[in-house]
Length: 309
Image (cartoon, rainbow, N blue to C red; front, side, top):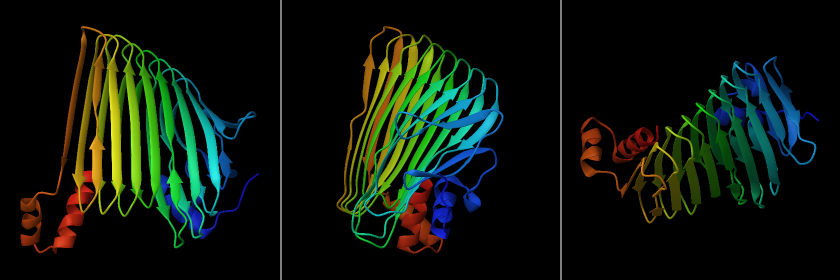
């Protein structure tokens, strides 16, 4: 059943999925408050409802070149929404999937979205997956998001996964698991901003199972005020492969950050690297921008935007 979109809805969709007016070119599916608020299929992209649980199946035809939007918005205070979305990308396809979740909570009760996304990426296919999280509202109700992403890459497949938490999420628990076959490659970039008393936990596992598979994880985060972050990425090399984990964080105020990168080599031909750094904004960076006419607050904001870009 389709639902009408309000001005608040369309503003959220533009922020999290670049969908002006709640629509986009090509295939899309908009989920609002646990229901469907709009759907368009194309010749190469077919979106259907699951019959056994809430969610959708999205099928991309072999060899197609398509973009598909699948955002979620929640505007009801106290709503707990769980959805299971499966994506089937045909061999040699080249697709972009724009996801994202926005919560507008003006009530007193917590609003929560738990999204479980599973990708089956065919031989030689390429996927760019973009996911943005954002929360807003003038009430006291929490905004909670718990995304889970699982991806299976067949031989020669490629996945670029870009996730970001813009602002306004009180609590998030991210779980990611990616399995790479022979010659497959994954690049995961995670950007995270927390403030106030927000908490963010992220657990990630990249399994490099196939010969000549590659994996790269890039995490950039900023923790402000009294917020807490925990990031645990694990790169596992089970064959001749290359893996790299890089975690960079800026800590401010009374915030706390825990970064625990792990590399696990189960083959003599596995090459795995991890790096982790946590620190404050350098004083010389602030001073340089202030000499150009910026206030201390403006200089700080400019540095943070550049770091998370």
